[in-house]
Image 1 (cartoon, rainbow, N blue to C red):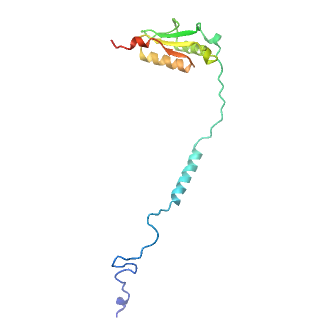
Image 2 (cartoon, rainbow, N blue to C red):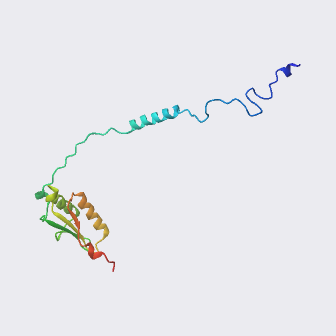
Image 3 (cartoon, rainbow, N blue to C red):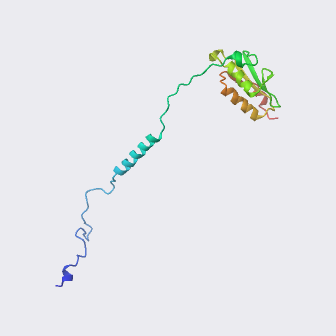
Length: 159
């Protein structure tokens, strides 16, 4: 025999059985190494913790408004905010600017909620939506607690 014949590899590997009975490992092929996955999650968690800013402790103090100094017009038990068809805002019939309206509402909102006067919002049928929305925002931001929409039943039909 030649040297090449002795160095020749067998046609089939030692583990291969042509009849389909090759040796299988007892370990399931579906198992996955999750250690790198957990490492990545821990690094992301640490990065998230470091990225979130530390909350500064704050104490908010609500300073009461002085009704005598800020209110330009008298505050009644029921006050009406009316918007005319030409978009003028009225407080109990008196024309007011948005700043004056905010001062009136803030002055009416001082004290206990049960003691606040009722604030009635009554826009005219032809008042602009923009003025109405801005007025409602001013009233809400000024701290009104007792609020009612008046006269909406007049506008239920679009004739």
